[in-house]
Length: 311
Ligand code: MEV
Image (cartoon, rainbow, N blue to C red; front, top):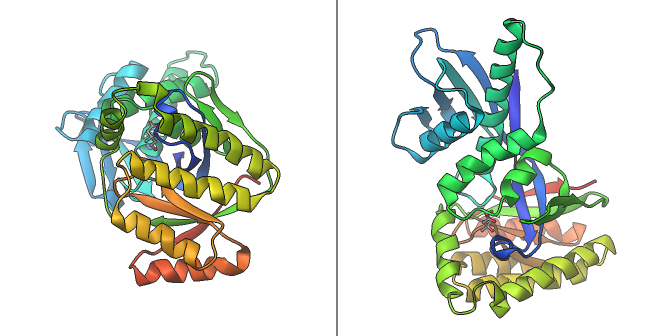
């Protein structure tokens, strides 16, 4: 049996969400799947994800090993002789929420392992709770990203599309499926470093920084535009958000170029998604312009794809 954590895209509000502002975010239809199998030779807790070249024990000095240990500790299950075997459908460090997807899938697999053992020992076990999955995965995100808002984990665990706030969690919204063009730039980066960069760029005003404030209000106005099927309005909010993220120091010439290329061939709007500094861009476009966006990105050696969110 395998357990999934979904990848995500942030349509509006990344970075500002760390300071308490809203973010409009959606789960991808793909992520990380993990199954737990007993390790025949015994020993400690292990994780093995061939497509990421990851083969680690919880004792290793590697961010994912530390994440695994943090999740096991939060669940209070020690280091059982189990190998967590994974299949990843999203690349790591690409701005698509791979680490949260990893954390959620690991948490689900370990909770399932723990509960099956308890049931086998005759204990009556309650159904797994989403809150426990989210708390365990957040323990690893905080370790990896420092000041994580929780948006990635909320989407990885819950799916769908919604408005996330640190204070209130994810409020789902209901819309017909929205097609989003995703362009993983291929440049890896560290979310923690980008969160730190924004902290440095906003030291004077903190959460009152006008750029953070505007990013938050764009998440609200973009959500209203999306609900009203005003895609031009949503696209304009995305373009402005990209410019503000650039002012905060988390865009790159490559990401700027990909967004400009998408707009040039007719996208409603385009922006970086996630922490920036590399990672991915997203665009929304009239259906008959999607191929042109993908072709423009291919000339920059970026292999994009269309994902449907909501619906
Ligand atoms: C990362 O996907 C989104 C950030 O806002 C960090 C966070 O919210 O934890 C950059």
